[in-house]
Length: 285
Image (cartoon, rainbow, N blue to C red):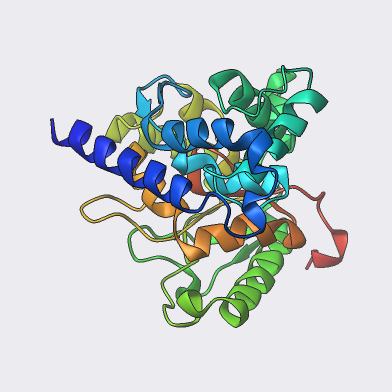
């Protein structure tokens, strides 16, 4: 009951905001052509019932930063500019250019994001990437490891890119500069045999997929602390937890800037990022 009430109140707030801001600012140009779609998107952003990853969810705020990045706009879902940019995206990818967010449009976004992950494309082709040779792995220092989980290793060039990313974030985001916990790593390289044994012992294997072939085996995947919802874990996949993370300045900065350092996101887990550049031989010891 409380969830429904909260969703209803959020929906009312979104609609009121969209109507009140109808003609205000650059995000509300072309209002006459896209205002109806803007209002519909404002409602669905909070109240749409769907199951993009199998379990029921309400709204799509958890995915909004990545969608905005793809549409090249900072405008919110309740604006005409967001609707018109979304229509352009839909037309580009062979969908009806309605300007309305829906599950079919999300699947196109999701496919694009997945295609940017070499690990996923290898799995689509039936391969499971081999772990890197031990001489390609380097050790994190204590300040880079999150207390909730301890991890020790990453591929050396990935570790260098991660350190440059963190330095930039600390220089550009007051939230990160003020909190050394943010962007610490709580999972990096995981030995496949040890990972499978841990999954079996803890009964937390995401089916068999994670135990058999996790992206962490490559030494290029990092789970970064981007904040956590009260009472939730650093890697809780509950919709409320993921939405909380997606609203943080840290996550939004990553969405906009992680690509500068070679990292691409996994849409379902705001904390999970993968380095997509080939091994750089200059990092060999």
